[in-house]
Structures are given as structure tokens and as C-alpha cells.
Length: 191
Image 1 (tube, rainbow, N blue to C red):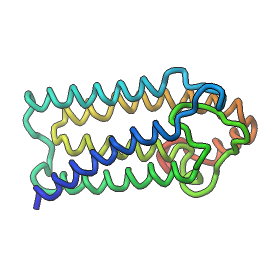
Image 2: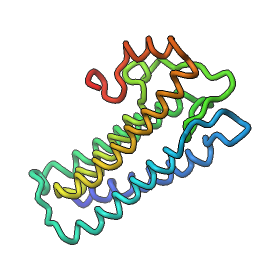
Image 3: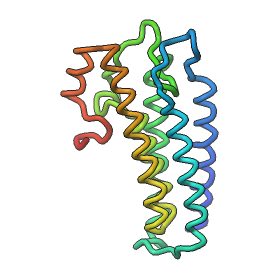
């Protein structure tokens, strides 16, 4: 049974990586197509994520599996969280449609989205990404690897959100400020 969860976790993480590559190829805003305000955060985020996974691979050789539930519920939980994270990220991206861009950019005629998942949090695609990272951290089943997979990418993501919110405030002004007062940033009902 656990081998089935390991198999599906492996398949779904490969789907995630392929999807992220496809998203970059299809949604990147290029010069002349919009005002790019990214400040290098797209590259920073992915460098940190990739480096964290590389460090995780090395730490697995040093640290034994030590998280409670490692042989029972942790792997199924990781698969469940991964499925939810992939779904949330996909729905958030589809909801924005042509307004979604992998780099922080403002395009002509772009409007502030408040419906669907954007009514729960201001950055649902990042919430989905955080869930994906949490799933990978749970799948690691060691506390050291958990921290390496989750903490540095989360810090990079929070910096990216800061940059993106600055751009959104410039683009939407008081409308975005009002949205911020009524909608949490990343975690529904919490933050």
C-alpha cells in the first residue's frame, strides 16, 4: 500500500515540475507586452526551491527517517496535501487567465480579481505552491529535510509576495488597499 502512495507522489511531483515549466513558457510576460516589475524574484524563488531540494537529497544520506507517522500516515498525508496544492494552484492560474504571469508584471487592461479563490486569499497560486512544498516536506519524513524544503522557499516566496503587492498597489491603488483589508494574504483566515 505504501508503495502505491510513493508511486503516486513521484508521478504527481513530476506533473508539478512539468506544469511549472509549461506555465513559464505560456505565461511569461516579455518586454513590450507589459510592465515588468519582477525585480528578479521569479529567478530567486526557483533557485531557492531547486537548491532546497538539492540539499534535501544530500541530507537524506545523513539523517534517518525520524518524523512520527513515517511508516503509517505521513506518506498518504503528503499525497493528499500535494493533490490539494496542485488543484489550488491550477484553479488560481486558470481563474486569472490571460492576466496570470509567472513574472511580476502588469498588462494593459488588467483588472483586480476578487472572485473564487481570490475571495479567500490574495495569492491563491502561492498558497497552492506552499501546499506543494509542505507535501514535499512531509514526504521527506525527516525534520532536517522538512525544514530545508519548507523554510527557505517560503522566505523567498514571502519576499516575492512583498514585491508583487507593491506592484499591485501601484496599479490598483485604493481598490487594492481595500481588498487587502478584507482578504488575507496567503493562508485563509490566518495570514
